[in-house]
Length: 296
Image (spheres, rainbow, N blue to C red):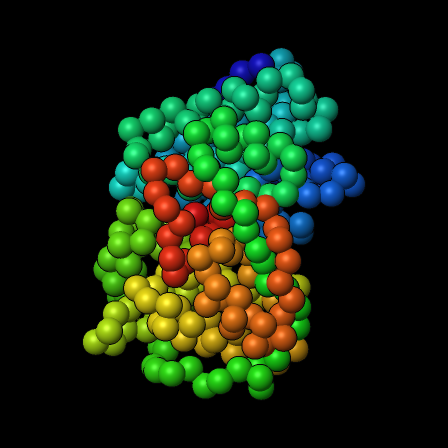
């Protein structure tokens, strides 16, 4: 087996996407999906863009595993943002599982975050998720998800102004990130803006932002961060309103600290269920905060 960095190319992006999709498809039959979230029906264009973005910003954290014939059998994607390390993908093709491929990839990804005091991973309910995250030195915080058809008419009108955001809000968002997770998302905001809709709120009490995922069969929140629960409630309420009456919605990775989000979801007619973990090192669960599985 050969491990090599992921290159910023369409070929390597497809190799990563294909390995992740194969791991997801094989695991779906046993329930729980792979250890780390992989979209059930990944959009190739968006995935390629995401993978190439990480290959550019974190060449030391993105790795491919190849067999003797040069076929990709696994991949890992990890990031380092101002002292906060994140692991967004660890996938091994089913025919290569049990051969140490995942362990080798995880070791390389962890080396990328060796100097980071903090770490964050969104893990699924797959039995291997707990093992992977504990091996990486993270604490497991059980998570919930909201799912169902949103009932916008049941929601109150947001209690303040929520505006469309854009590149000019980068400093505001980085400031909120540092306060909640100890490190700004930085260049990840540029990638998020290419594929999701940004909502921002900012008043004399604080600020916050929310990326809304409008594509696909189910909409949802890609990432939400705010300086208070009141502002986070405002943003999530507005995001569900943007998605529209009756739209299928998924909101993942809610720790017990995000009761404000549970309340908004229940008011909108969504159902709450347990779903995986938010795994952390060197930090308490950020709140109010909904992490992105891809950008953490």
